[in-house]
Length: 193
Image (cartoon, rainbow, N blue to C red; front, side):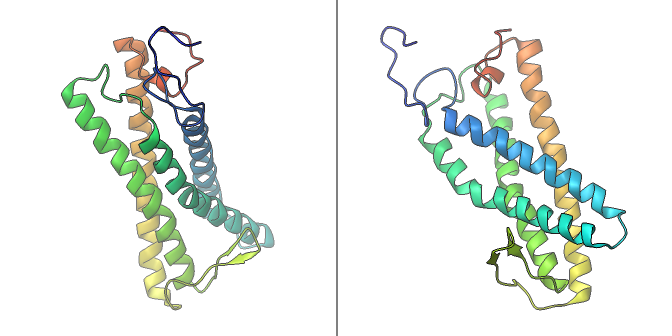
């Protein structure tokens, strides 16, 4: 429903309205689901004995991580095109903190999959995305480097998980304590606080 004087919005990239476009909303929640799935798989695989199932699940873990990386340019493009005023209802310090958290999330959505890909290459396991697209090894097989890259990948994963939790807690704070519309920008069907 359009209000008087409100610019017409495009369903996929939004406009000067009260929530993001549906394309960006869909990618936000898809990305969260992919990251949560890859994280859960990684935790499960850590203690699993070597088996054909473990190798298959590792492949899925890699495919999901690289899918997050592949979707990121589309997500950034939709975010830039979306004309929602992100500073509305935010204090200046909140806007700066929000920009920092979002920047870290985007940086880690690049860094985590790349470190995983580098680790896989250094460990001597080439990545064949979805079992059909062979990706180049980023480094030669180097077992010592693989250990370092694995530790870096795991640290970056936990950092990403922590930042995502902070992001979610901030959204809940805005909805339940501040009682503003910040969370409804990404969940427009949510009941007003």
